[in-house]
Image 1 (cartoon, rainbow, N blue to C red):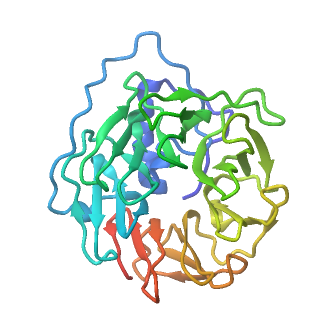
Image 2: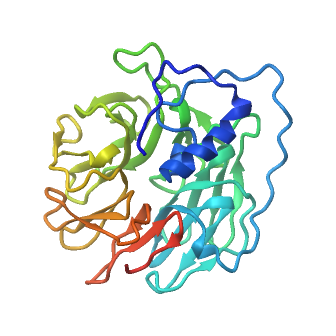
Image 3: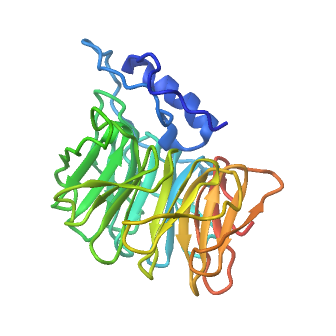
Length: 347
C-alpha cells in the first residue's frame, strides 16, 4: 500500500497528472499523495488542454461523510476540510457538524489553518488558497492555478499577515499581506540532489519563530529567520515524512511512512527515532492537555503518548478505516477522528 515510485520513473505529461493523482489519493488516502511521494517529475506540455473554471462547492446534507483530509481548531470551534471543497464546522466538540455556508471551489482541500476563532485559510488542489474571517462560515478565493494541477498540501499562518503554503515538487508560497498576494519562494537544492524538487507535505512552527516543513527522503525543511532563508535538516530517515508538530515544550515530532517517528529536543539540530508503535503510516499530530500527544495513521490506527511525545501506544479500529487527521479531545474527552469516510468522532 505504501509503494513509492522510483525517481527514475518515466516522466508523465501533466495532462495525466490529475488522473494519476486520483488513483494514488485513493490508494494512500491522503490528498497530499494526489501525486504520490516520489512521483516522476513532469514537464508542462506545450499546449495544455483547456481547464474548466472552478465551481462553488455543492450543498451536501452528508458533508460529514465526505473524505476529510485536514482539521484544526478555530477557538472552540472545530473545522475540517476535504473532497469537493467540503468544509464542515462543529461547535459542540465534534458531536455534530454542519457544512460551511459558502465555499467558492469544488477542488480537493488538503489543509486548514486558523490563527484565532475568526481568521483562517485552507489550501488544496488546483493551487487554491481560501480565506475566511467569520470562523469558516464563508470563504473567499485568494489564489488558484488552473494551468497545472500542482497541489498545495499544507498551509500555515503565524499571524494575520504572514503565511506559507507548500506542495508538490518544492512548491513553497509566501504572503506578507494576509494572503492578498502570494509569492513563490525558491528553495536551495537539497544535499546530494541536482535540483529542489522534493514534495513538501506539512508546515508547522515552534514558539521561537522557527518554521519547519516535513518532506520527502527524511528531510525537514527549516527556516530560522521567519522564512527569509531555508535549509534542510536530516532526521536520519530515508522515507517520506507526512506530518509534523512543534509541542508546547519546544520539542519537535515528525512522522511518516510505515509508522516512522522522529523527535528533536534542540530545534531540529539532532533527531532521534522513537520506537514504532505501529507500522501504519502517520498522517497527522495533535497535542492535548497534560502532556498528551496523539497521531492519526492509516489502517485505522491512532497513537497516544501521555509523556509529551516520548513514547507512544497504538490502538486500531475494528473497521481499519484509514485516518487522515485528528483533533485531540480536552478534559478527558476522546479525540475527534477524520477519515476517507468522514468524521469518526469519539471512536
